[in-house]
Image: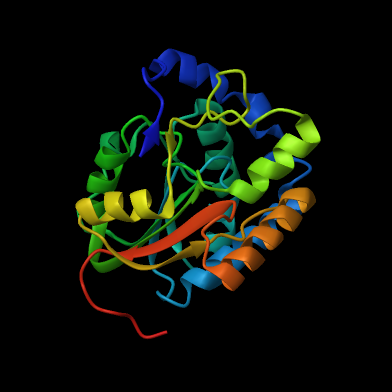
Length: 246
């Protein structure tokens, strides 16, 4: 596991996720974002029929809007007060502003929990996963995506275009990642949290054309050589043992 030490305090982090952080998703990236979320929801449908869904770190709420239109009963949590307020207005229902363990959700109340690029931002990933485990119904699914710390193709592309190595952490960066996962460390963390990892591999939830191209090259290398060098990792873990019908 690669992580930041010491961790920034909560006040430093809360200042980071303001209106400017979400402005692109709300405006210019809305249309490609809708298509991306629709693809991700289609993947979830391979594992579970529409039911109760919790999105931890729901941001401005576009994924939950797509899920709601697809027949899911939705709930969401979000640390940013700006994003939580926007999502609540968008979805016409309140999104909880705070950590998932502070929300008053009943145990075993969700068929699916999603965490799209959230775990790397949190200060307590093991605690979040333990809480999520208690919120899932027996046989429920957690679907999550995180950046891959071994995304060597992206790192080389960054070095060639920027003239410097990509740094793992800075409060001045738009994306403040506190934990950096490989496929192995993520699966280990999930197993220790009580999940069975059913599938893991490249995540294709990318809207930036340049990053799409780089990820395509990385995925081709992965398929040809078995090297896990793609940009993002997506994992479908299940709470209890057994393989679903696909």
